[in-house]
Image (cartoon, rainbow, N blue to C red; front, side, top):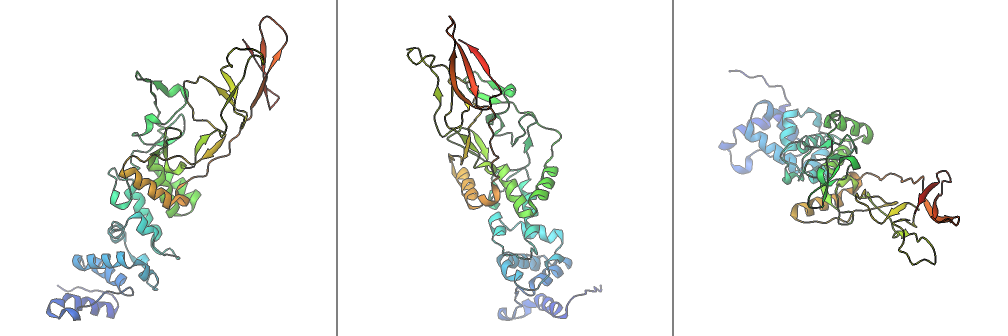
Length: 339
């Protein structure tokens, strides 16, 4: 059967030498180099020469930065070949590629995104969790996975007290949200598949904070809310021996403070980094990856606003029942509390 192959003469001669290599001394076997490996890879894929194809893929994986320094055009790699090549890379290896002209790095990151969306996470590639089960809560609008959802606070009406005293959240899945649309939105905002991949990686991987006692996505590593100053609780009278009132304020920002609070909403006037509590090898590996690429993974926390700030309680009048007035910095809302 006659086969017509259109390729460079030098590449064709290389292929013929490789076919006849068993009749040659090993030192005379044709050698791959950064300049010729891509044309040979394309030819091997077209001619279904799997042993040569595997050799070319391994060479590309080991010498990609050298290949990118040549004038070789990598856009000729079809999706099948690129998928096999991408399967050899971890996320840190793709990140280490020096590709100023973006000949292949973005395409490899898109393949990593597809791998991150597989139900079974591939830890050897730097994926310890999967995007497959990620969903958005209709009530609190947070992204989470079913594994951590019960421990992430939602709005008060969706939180339940358990018989053992613990509180869990019953998040409501937003059926209008889809991962595909989310990726499109990220691509539009972040402008590169590299940043999209790392943001998605951070959304899929959760760690536990020892300070706020809640799981958090790696994208929100710097979102641990807190008050730098302890709360101050008001007394009914300066000379009275009665215990302080159950209401007070945080001197750092004036936000209201309550001595008894069933639902801890994790409030605070400032953000800080979560205090990661690494329990096992897996979580340690996730945190190490976060530390290495936090500039790509983390989202900036928003600016916190406190329109109503409690400054003090003022006694009013000398009645049998004392009336106290909440005075806010806004000077708009004045609320009365009868004691």
